[in-house]
Length: 386
Length: 121
Image (tube, rainbow over all chains, first blue to last red; front, side, top):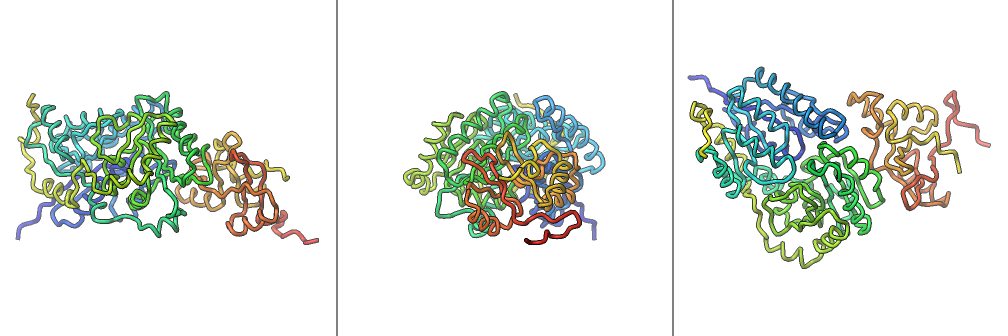
């Protein structure tokens, strides 16, 4: 009997959004007999200001190999860059110690880019979920920087795959897999309405707004003005609203303060939400407002109308559920009213279509590729085709 | 109207300050203000959870406060009384339309320094 060779994959997660990308993959790996993982948890997950979402990872039962604190508490553009430097130093040591066969990254955040830089320099092949898409903000730039350090691209739609090819990535590295974060939605893994009624005081008979607005790094100076416009619109409408704190990009501290000051009896504020709850609220909500990518990727699955504010998701593929508005209160208010109208909802109900592929099998597909890919010179030596 | 000072801390105050205020007011909670507006409360329970999460006493109260604390705009003392019993909190902020703190309703009368309840008249 020959010994089974386990393929060892290191996975990095720093925010609740991309934890949603990797959770179905972690489950798939746990269920397999010849693949194993090391999970490196960093950034937002470790911060109590943002609800310590590491608790969700622990609750899900995954083994965490490293917790890396990286975020400097100043939350300025300078401290944000410096925090990434801290992570680059620490994750290099982790990878030296863990010796993974592959590093799996997801999304477009700075810590993912740092892990890509570290792994590629250490001759460890990098695989990247949600590769090749367009998005705004510094994140959009990071995503394409990650692509240069990546050896296996997992694209969630044909548009993204094509962009990777056109930017000089060799075709054999590009896999059109779909978006793994849609697996759980397709398979119905979200909190039921009665639970939301009990825990969050949701009143199902009234319209429910889900609000989440992150800072836009390129518009750091206007962070507060932008959210005030949205909050003014919400306060005029007075519908029950659940607000979730933003991520920790530069400007977030002012943003959180502003949200707290706009607290009203019809507003509930959460530091973070478990993914199961977040998806349940997306299903229960009548409209989602803000600039989260989940409004473009996950919301179409529920036929949830989204009022997308400002430039953070600029260029990203979107379905008919998204109404784009500038950060201006009247425009936001009008768009919310339009999104709440029966006509708009009706138009969506005949399945407007999701520009991201998700059939509930995406994580299976990705793990299968990670299991079978041969780690050899061809994989490791990158050549740009253009 | 009572002196609300011993029931309030600022959003930038430390957890240590909140602990001192709660010790002083003997009502197991304080109200957190930002520019006069109520933005949260910190209770003994919130402090206990912070302790278990190894959050230091020098951290700002903002990190541990309850963001969704109960408030009321009710002015009638009898209705306030009913409300605080129903909500099961020890300290209930009374706010105006702008969410600014104007008074505090208490569920229990304070105990004296020896921990005894005051003798009823």
